[in-house]
Image (cartoon, rainbow, N blue to C red; front, side, top):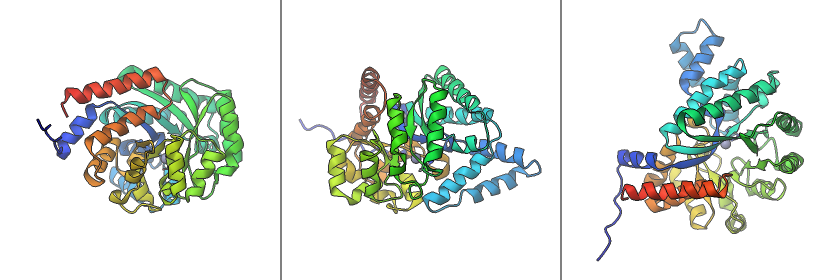
Length: 352
Ligand code: HPA
Ligand code: ZN
């Protein structure tokens, strides 16, 4: 007997179904999961005479950019509105809402302390806020969050070294490693080799954004010089066959963030032309992520929907990407297995 074909899910059914499947998100920036309401609160505190409407207009203006450096500028302008470490209590509350809304059961989240260290904040207080809030999210929602400190390409290697030194001095188990975000043009990978080596020698994991705003050589350097365990974005790998073969063979996962790439415009002009399909077909371990949900207006469920409705990914391929999200994480093998089993169970229960 011929098996019935899997149905094509309408948008609402798709969201309902994918929300209840446990997922991991591995590329998400804490300061970009802030809600508009929280930014408004911070803005009006800084400008007590501004009406809600004026605050809203100013925030919309801040959010106008068309490339990565423009986005980073806006990202820093928002961070400039924070006044002390306890402001992160609001941001973590926004993170918790985001994770629940998208059916995410495990997240590795970038936190970027550079701008706050520059403001003269007490690092131990900042770490304390991270620590307290990660525990609070676990207690209130059952969701596990682990942090990766973005030592940043934007401010140079001395700043990155300082970030690492502070991190090692105020160590907490919830911070599992470092990442390299920020301006790929201003901060080439070769500047950060020593910082990455030192982090690994001290038991931290290391990942790097690369190939988001620079060519495939930036990804090669992140693999060969930084020895990054995963690559954030990796978009320009699509222009380098040998690199795609290497990523597939060495099982170096890509944290793909499609909507972010369309916004920053460097290698991808629309979701439907995103090379994620090529990466997947070549056997690269791809994961799907939202990167900066508030800034780019897409959350994790939207990214899954975009793949389904605009790039031809089938349901069972998206299921594989969900499994990849656990397999490519820094969870231990037992936890990976139990989350993967849960995915299979929930998927079957819904008979899709
Ligand atoms: N790219 C680089 N740096 C970042 C990003 C990003 O998408 N988001 C926050 N910092
Ligand atoms: Zn990012």
